Length: 81
Picture 1 (cartoon, rainbow, N blue to C red):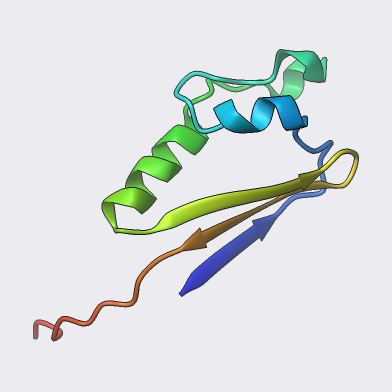
Picture 2 (picture 1 turned 120 degrees about the vertical axis):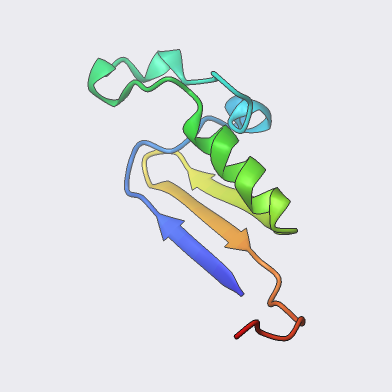
């Protein structure tokens, strides 16, 4: 199963992509402090997704926004009633 989230923001510079899932990392060069965060959201998301044996990927284009895709395995264990 996958979940895809797309935004229409400014995009992520290619040089920042290797670090966007690092704890406390955020883009300083955006220049708009309205969107500034603590830099923990993507780190927490990746940790939770990986604990569920899933993965998260990002596609981004400057000026067009970013798309985050999360892949989660479907459970093969019987449901508990």
